[in-house]
Every structure is written in structure tokens, then in C-alpha cells.
Length: 96
Image (tube, rainbow, N blue to C red; front, side, top):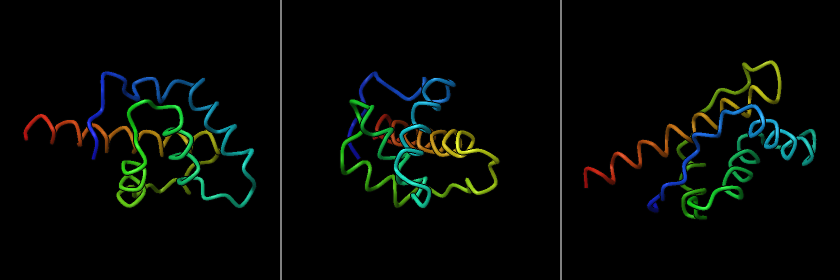
């Protein structure tokens, strides 16, 4: 896992950010893997998430987004899980 800088995903649950990511995911197609597309879109907007991080996050995320009623709710749930996982990485780096 790479070291994240001062930039974080604290903005990640703002309605504009979620809506932007949801629009990106929606543009992909109806049969898209929402978790993968959301992770990819978040990584593209982040200066601190590198390709190895994306691959590791993809293997670690366990999000039950199917319970959400809307795509925006699914995206918000996935982004929150990404943010929580990255926060855990930051804590591990501080302790190391």
C-alpha cells in the first residue's frame, strides 16, 4: 500500500462528489460492476491512490451495495468503504 498524502476522501460523501462518480458509473453501461467502476472513478480523481492500491482495495472491499435503492446510494456506500479501508492503511503506517 502506498502512502497517502494530505489529500483524503473526506469530500467523498458530499452529494456533488457522489453524484459525479455515479454519473461516471452510469455512463459505463447497465451491466457494469458498480464496485469496480466506482473504485476506478475514485482512483482517477485522487492524487494519492496508485494502481497497486486500486488492485489491493478491489480485493479487500466487501460492500453489500445491492441493498441500496439508488445508484447514488450504492456509490456512497462503496466510497465510504474505500475511505474506511484507506483510513485503516493510514493507521497501520503510523504504527509502523
